[in-house]
Length: 229
Image 1: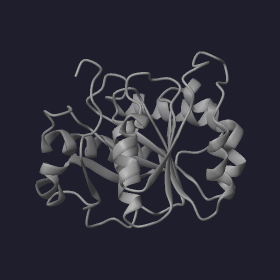
Image 2: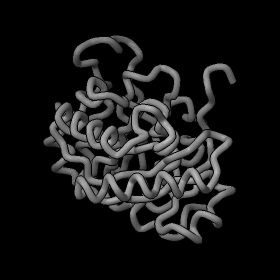
Image 3: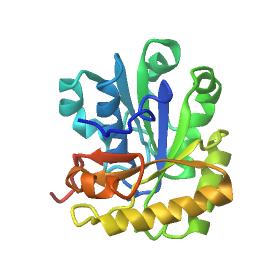
Image 4: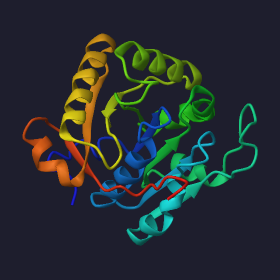
């Protein structure tokens, strides 16, 4: 089951997701692909994160493929290259107008640089660039840090961020208060940048409480495990 106010889920045929390490970018990407799969078909999730070796959306391939989601994964070789190689299979997202998709991109500007080669094709397909922010992480815990990150990502990939995703969390210890605090910071970032807030992510068991106080609340199941789990 996806959220009640779900018109944003399939608001674009391709959703490109960026976010700092620890923002929950990959968790959001996986949940978005699964939600999109309930509304559209066919759907693919492309794991193009060549920066973070710990949280990879391809680790959820069994759950995604069981839901009919195609998984496209970058090779783990050449991760430190200036412009890492991408799988040829990713071109299907640009070439097939019937395919809906989510692209999980590396969290820093060097990771986002892979988008530069695809920006024209992405624009032609009406893709949107979503930036996940987490007010509980030291790299994105202030409005100024978030704005600086957004501008560096935009400069690296040659694309403009279209919307913000508030995913303020403390993993399994997340409370609604965390989400509300993140929503306030996202509002301030939005006011200063003109970039709208797409949704507010919450663990599924907190959905009703959060939805009573916020619009466009996205309930998520937690799939990603820490390396030591």
